[in-house]
Length: 471
Image 1 (tube, rainbow, N blue to C red):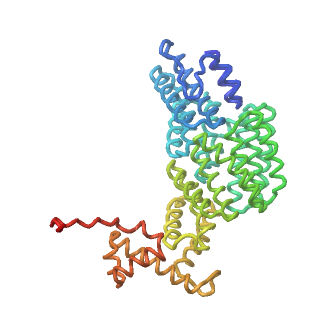
Image 2 (cartoon, rainbow, N blue to C red):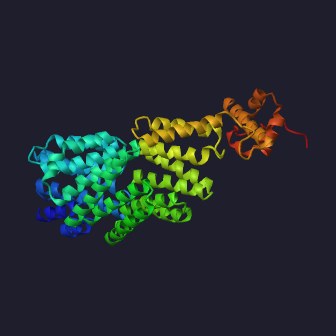
């Protein structure tokens, strides 16, 4: 129990390696389960809680695939043991950790429900635990661009933080900084930017006082992102350098990947696409190994934009589509919608996608972003709508790279594709729909439109005659 209490203090300080050493032989390693069958239930539950929390945090930091799922199993077992003993405060703490696992995986609805349940059993005396859970609740709301909800949570929890230690004050200021930064983006209010810079700076100071290097680096990264958005690229690089140096010392691959993603965004804004590609590729690899799907989807979206600017269009479309599917798959709908918009922004106007692909991508983005409160997201959605309308209007003589034969070829391909879809892939019926002879239609497919051959129904071999031919 003493080892668990010491480990909990190190985990809270962001010193995960020290927490692992404090647990000693109790720590089975990431992916392992501590042997607790012979121990009293209270001890077993405590060990499962600390090992589960450390598995999630250290596994994420080191990029270990499946770490969040393994942590969820340990924490769920700890919750059952605590509840069976009537130890509701400890069960709430474990639920808070479990909710954080769901948040890291991008399952925001599940995270929100679990954290809400964690708060129900707490009393007025549990101020510190309440504060931690409230902070995590704001992270969930921020991830879905629900800024006013996040701000309300922080306002309701303000009395808890007024007399807190430096570590909790750092969390308070850092979360306020995040919310104000997002509100600045949405409303274009310069006052919000100034207030957010002050909050991030205060958070960095308090974390330095508490010697929480990892959380200090996180706020340096957040401050750099804000400065990048207002065009202060040099200042952003300076803060990213400080954050990166700390995370290298801590061997935190996941957070370092997030710093790399921010740096790639800054480099894109500066037009330094080659450097941005090297940086974001490193981030994608690190996040892919860690299995943190929501963060990986964001990095893939940035990579898709970089590849488009470098002229690697097929790689770009592949990365962006993968980002959409991955984010939507884990419930990070806003992230998925923004990645879908990036497909239209980078490829919709230049006819690298068909009209149908552009339209379907836009409709998917519109559905995914249905609940967004972000003005920038809405502005991007409207701009993409204009791109889609221009494409659906058809080819215009004054379009860039217009060619008469190219326009005819494109229309021909569209009609052939429609005919094949309506005929279920039957070449004979498709030719009849278009008023063409079967041989003419087949020749067009095999010469000018080979990309549509996959939509054709496979040929059935002719039956051999049952009549024996004379020798």
